[in-house]
Image (cartoon, rainbow, N blue to C red; front, side, top):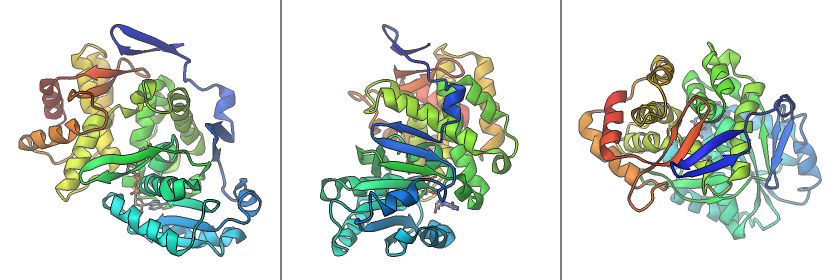
Length: 378
Ligand SMILES: NC(=O)c1ccc[n+]([C@@H]2O[C@H](COP(=O)([O-])OP(=O)(O)OC[C@H]3O[C@@H](n4cnc5c(N)ncnc54)[C@H](O)[C@@H]3O)[C@@H](O)[C@H]2O)c1
């Protein structure tokens, strides 16, 4: 049994999220009427769903240009039911995760006369699963949607857990709804075309899952030498399993789920700032440096030892490219953090770690502590 603390006076007990050997071997995880399938898409129930449950539904595939060029032919030729699917393709990149792009897609759905019984298939990275899930959830008060994530980041994190939405200028994920895909299909063959930077970006979320919930997972992901060769379905399933067990206990993020935000308060601040500066960085890079900064705060508050902080520092510094920031830019980053949705009454609430594999949430952190942490990562 693990203990998670909301604050010093408020201690909750939750079931341990360590997975059993049996759970590591499952081909599918189900929660909240949403099923996550692991393994070859071709051998999964996807075809059966298209030809039976969704036989009379129009199918719309939302994707981006890069994924379309690399994988669309493979997808539509592998499944007969998709030969007549409408394909909506947007340019690749976080800068297109906006309400304007959603409005254009809603107009296209109207042109295609899409109705409540039709099906949206989100085929791409986290931008597509976040935006496509949001589009599907609001159109005609909600269509069924299926996620087929194609980046490591979307496979281990973005495509599961039911958070959908878009950015508002530099503010990440400001507009959104909780809405679960009916099915998520995680086939790691799609990762074969990802470049090293994108793999490293997704790897940050796997590291986070270990840091907040499972020391064993942290050790397994730290031990990886060559991400391209060594990240396999088992490790992806372990990461998804950790996230899903947290989400199951707190779908709407009233408490425990906040631990998944570890590294994201400062990480989103940095990511949003770099986006507004016109020099966007990958989401996972922001999270990696955000985790180091927030680990430093955890250490300052006596929640972790210097030894643990150094372990995290070694991993981040040795693997992630340095982010070009100047101390004069910290104020802007802080401003973005104050606008973050996780704040309460103008106080920044952090999730911090209190050991390897354990986290606490709703921790108040002063501006001085945040500035010290930003200096530390410089
Ligand atoms: N909803 C959530 O719980 C959650 C969690 C974490 C992150 N996110 C969001 O996810 C987004 C980041 O996800 P991402 O890193 O997947 O971004 P992304 O969707 O922009 O994909 C990254 C890049 O990889 C390309 N790509 C996708 N699949 C590919 C493939 N198989 N081969 C080669 N290139 C491929 C894309 O075209 C894009 O250029 C952010 O917007 C973040 O806020 C959401």
